[in-house]
Image 1 (cartoon, helix red, strand yellow):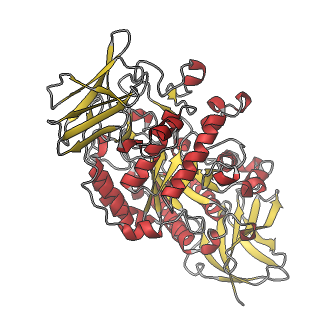
Image 2: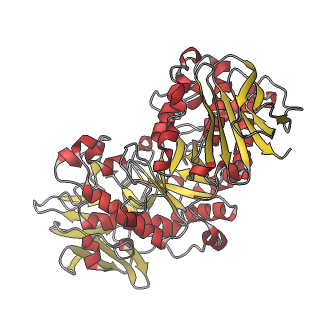
Length: 601
């Protein structure tokens, strides 16, 4: 390991030196603990008795070789502090951990599995000029084997179930909520104790590799939710690792996060090397296709509060890490969850930006959901909540998310957020998704949203799959599948997402009727998207085309009866509509959307 690079925060391979590596002569254990008085390894191979470690290099690193230790064995570091007390810690660079409440690390051989996804790895890309339709899941609650909370599918078993479902539904990427080991199921993986340890809830490292491999062999990419901001407070993990604040800030004013966890101290080179190496580890060892980085707002600004100023050290860390990851792993994509107006999040790091490929459009998400919560009678006053996003859209490369955060903690699910009673919610939700998929920007949808899930997500339970037995839910599911298929197959909806030539308003001043229309194009195809949200039908609505006269083929309506709407799809799908006197005349449902493909006369 490049020691100077480690201390200055320049390396991405610290996990190849630190931690435990099995070998012919036994296992080599190494840890970084500058303030420790002494350290021993305790494990299943020595009866949990102490095998002393020796100081190496500059005295800040500790090492020992244990001939009896083998792959699959468990171990901990007993770290003695200057005051004569000790704590038994899992390995910060450990490659596996026991299931909570147990805390030991596993010795793992990362060289055994052989991937068969070379073709995928060679052709994958950041999807800037391709469709990106992400299905976000929590691995433990999409489906369960039985009725108990812990009846989880193993990684590769999950792949066997999920892959055909994704193909059926039209998603080409999956985003997995954090998989690093974590003690509380309710944290969903966001408060971790094992940053290099795939959670044992769902199996082993090799089973996770096989899962990724299977996805790639079926043409589906995987993004991992990565947590570079904070970590769990449990005293067997990173907190006060060597008896001092080694990974965290020493002051609670900036050291404690809003989630009751500890904030990483990004000004320390050792911490930067730890996090950079962790990000590289998931991409290199498991072949993940990208990282969605959680809570980036809390790295840009101190405690996520702009009034406290920019955390320059954390910003510089993000720039260096993102640049390095893109150089090491061509074709990956990096996405930031960031709700601030900090400029240049998706600008190249070499050009002064943060170096992300995408930024979650939290403004679009909040404005859109607020609009659909509003009673249709008052939507005229909220009309421009659906147009405002295009005022700033080209400042960043935005991704449109309807994520897990929007369906928990009393916020209500997406379908439940729609205004009105049960049956009235479905046409609005169908129209919402049509608007989302026509709007520029890549897409992300959380599991269960495609079912019109009314119950808030609960990590202890699987999705309510029985909803598909009810006609409105089955129709909604069929609609989402068709919408996804159309999105993937229509370059006009994604090729020029971040080029102003790809989008043009046709009408965004119909406040009285709550009607919107815009054109999407890839330079060849032209798709006209029309939406109506007033709650009252409009007959022969006159849409002025402003030079876009011609013939349009109706390719999708959210109000077709096959999806639970009121209009018969038979005879309507593929119907040709011609403009008259520079306008189209359309019958618009009370709530609905239309996709019309421009055709030659």
